[in-house]
Length: 179
Image (cartoon, rainbow, N blue to C red):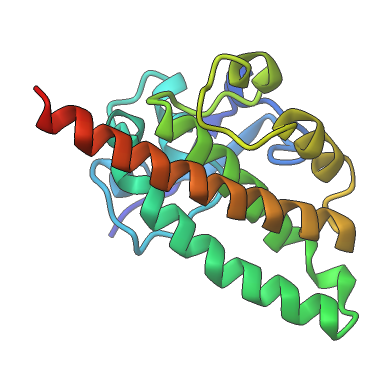
């Protein structure tokens, strides 16, 4: 049985939406390798990385994992859609936080980097394969995560990002064949 340990939220991940407290709990043994079965919330691999704890670094094989992250989003997307259609807006915040975290994770990992919430806007400026006006749109979503318009915007960002991801994978397969 794995034990949950309290772990400090590093400066790189300090963000009130995701970490209102300065500490969180994590079962570090679970993240020694990759598994799609873990609940994907709270940037566990990055928490360990920035705390200098040895663990799997999925961003080193980021493009490979992005497809799985996009699949996880599809489940969150349909749950959010259902809750908004039933006017259960109050129940969407947790899912939206998870969705935003997943989106940032997919974007950073595809570019071979661990997520850094601190100054993420500056970092994503150097990324090539991202949706148009992503930083402004993310700022809107993060400021009002439980709003329907934020959900629509996040859904659209995922749709656009998935297209970028497909192009990225096709381009990389061609460049690997030319080597």
